[in-house]
Image (tube, rainbow, N blue to C red; front, side, top):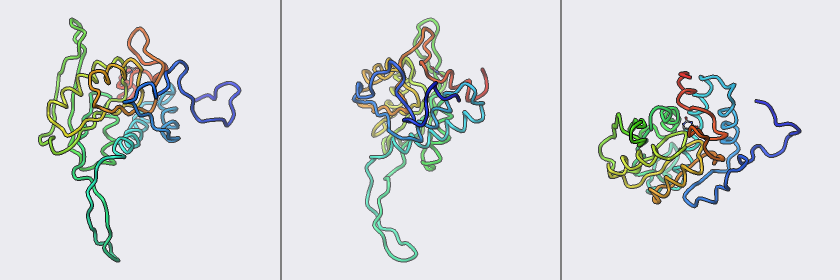
Length: 232
Ligand code: URA
């Protein structure tokens, strides 16, 4: 990773040139966290090999899941420490984690490290070349979602087509709430997802400038699935 010309020890990160301020989307949260920026910088670097890319994606999955669950309702309990009784607060039920295949699997690993009891679902979507709409090739969601919320994981929120479809599929299973976690978001994808699902908060490590002609996020990080699984 090369420092930009003339840079020294200034601020760790600046928004992508041309990206709208995150405040442009009231439903979008971009946490202000040095570790997120640090790991995202390495993830973006085209020289980062696949094994490191996978590890970074998992670490970002853990950090972003911690942010996405920051304000979940908790219930008061009493626990006995080795010394005394303590008041404590726990989640009534860990939320379900839903990975959008393939690249969502990279985030899932880290998300599970902080929510080890969470039931897990998978949604696989491909673009139908005739209709240009996302079409499902696999959907496996755990039962009993009504008792808990669901966090949908997909590192790249690009056009938003898959995200809208994945969230609709999860909502149909009746969870108490849904949140969407990604690493890099394009303004087009955020706008489309929030328009279709205004009740679903979106959490991203970065809001980038936009999409190129092929629908890749710019500056983005390339194809997250290929980089994660070494298929490029
Ligand atoms: N999916 C990716 O993996 N990368 C992009 O830039 C857009 C969609």
